[in-house]
Amino acid sequence: MPTIAFTKGHGTGNDFVIVADPDGQLDFSDAQVAALCDRRFGIGADGLLRVVRSAALAEGADAAASGAEWFMDYRNADGSAAEMCGNGIRVYARYLADAGLAVIDGEGILIGTRAGTKLVTRVESGFEVDLGTWTVDEDGPLVRARGLVVARPGLGIDVGNPHVIVALPGDDELDGLDLSWRPVLDPEPPAGANVEFAVPADPLVQAGVGVIRMRVFERGVGETLSCGTGVAAAALAVRHWAGAGAPDVWRVTVPGGELGVRIQAHDGGAHVLLSGPATLVYSGEVALA
Image 1: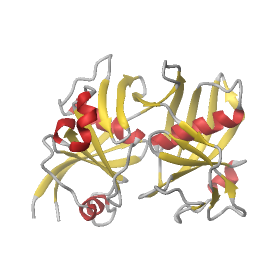
Image 2: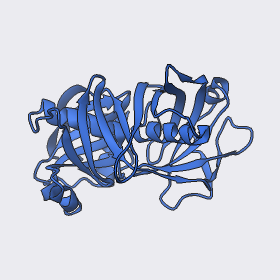
Image 3: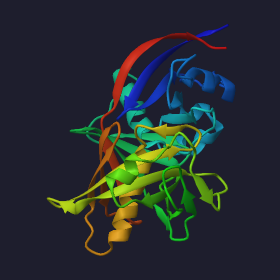
């Protein structure tokens, strides 16, 4: 049974097993990923980050061509591949810097993902990732969840991976949700979706910053303490509902902490950026079944 080195990291409680595989020599099965992420019999995590050079992967060819040496091979806790992870990519950048695999200076670093190449820079709170443009689907599904008396309409937001956001009127309803059960989407998106439940603050805008609170159920994982792309999607949804005059800077509180979101003008359309901490907790070795 081979032994591999790993590092455990998290971004606002959204935690990951990080495995360095620069030359792409490891080929994890879904079952192996699930075993590593198991919180009782494994290391325990919401997902796995494989640190691999873009040139070592067929799906990293575009990233390599765009100048991204490294590719974030992100797998959910059930082993399924995911397009993008906003907390994960910040933790990935922290690992690259601390392991001496990359220098992240003022210009930042390009990192390949299944949702395209992303720019990650250092900021006061930790790291900030440019998630790029987004799309809005007004015809989002109805969402049923334990703790909601009736189904609620969801707004579809895609920030490289799919999300459905539900607005709730207050903290009591948010706290009363039982997210140990997967919310039911009607209709169910073909690729599934992460589901966010968001409560706008009262007042919504404080010192020029939009403020919301959120919980999330991540596909392939379950409820997590934080979801970076979900935080961005929730801020974009509330901004969309708020209409003209809504701020471009947001502060989002999740069970694991607080993250920042801002919208920035670009020639090809506005981009959404996510910022927050990234922490490496410990390193070790584990037998790979």
